[in-house]
Length: 350
Figure 1 (cartoon, rainbow, N blue to C red):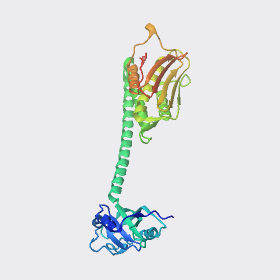
Figure 2 (figure 1 turned 135 degrees about the horizontal axis):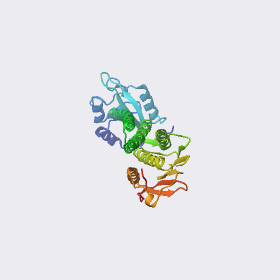
Figure 3 (figure 1 turned 30 degrees about the vertical axis):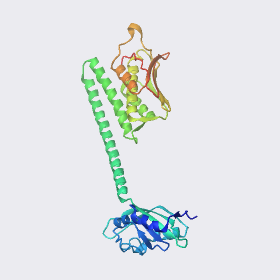
Figure 4 (figure 1 turned 180 degrees about the horizontal axis):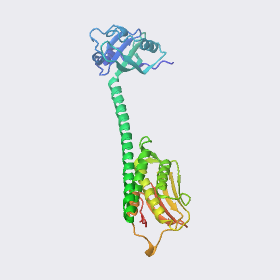
């Protein structure tokens, strides 16, 4: 290996620079005898500054600096056959904590052509490494706690959904039963995303798996005859933040519930399709059915809770909401184009 260019300093100034340095430094001869040591080096490693000059590196302290690997690398550096850059060593001293050190060494040209001189810089990274390990431990502990909270929330939501379903079976009023069923479906959509979050890292949710699972749950609870009604999910490989996935999941829940309740009153068969595609920061979500279509004029239903939920979530996502005739059926499309978009009122009866 070619020798690293020597740093030129005047002989008289070298000692002054080393002695006054705030960094732990050793000025060594080619045979690793100490010419000078900075006061910071002596303080950091409990070395007597009065007697340090003239000692061999391995004679410092109680001999803890007599490290064969370090000695070999310094000798190779002095001969120009190696470089010491960010070399890590453990300094072990009797009855003291082991210190993790990073050392760098280079040849100095102090004006004495016939004498090789080495400058050895030492950095104690023990405390920094301990802090880094503590930070990693805290992050791991936080991740475990978050995952445990997610499991507990998901379990609690399942319990709430069960209570709602049991209550729906007991009430006599059809209107009350309908409200309880709707509440059950909404709770189940949140439970679905919580379950998905518990198996993902970094709060990122894979939309295909999440929306497929969500629609499976909605179909199982609302479709009595799978041969008559079906739900299809066509989603690309997009991943989104957890809060975005919750909003998208609630939108899909509301619109699927609405279609299942109103789109197929007299049809023998029906199909609901959820499509999601993204490109960069732009994305499009659409929920399309092949049902009877959206009533208009006096037959148009009044906007309900589902309408407000979908509109509010669309605004939150900075999306543009559009309702159109799917011929047959209805298509609801939400587009996000990287900035706040206009909202169109959704004439839904959900």
